Length: 121
Image 1 (cartoon, rainbow, N blue to C red):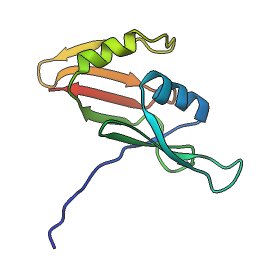
Image 2 (cartoon, rainbow, N blue to C red):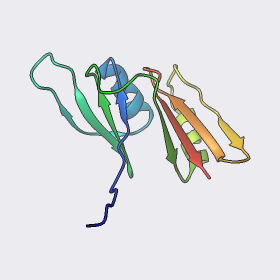
Image 3 (cartoon, rainbow, N blue to C red):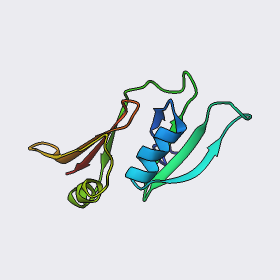
């Protein structure tokens, strides 16, 4: 059998579910696909997605290190930037940088220090 990698799902550490929802759902337009807790009061593990981008967000200690970066190739980075600028999100006002090697780069930092580096080559 040939080895075939089917998909990659970045895993980000979060510390507050409501702050995560505010950023990923309200600001970035992701959908919560599912969430899991072993029991009431336990940390959450959840999946959010927008289009073909899927992320796992976890409150579980040891699942991931805060401050991780995901490099994500995207079409329409200018349109996404305009969409985000039109929202009243007081914690982040990103800009698009032009990089001679990478292309157009929109870097978003979530409330937990994780970075989504959105690049249109």
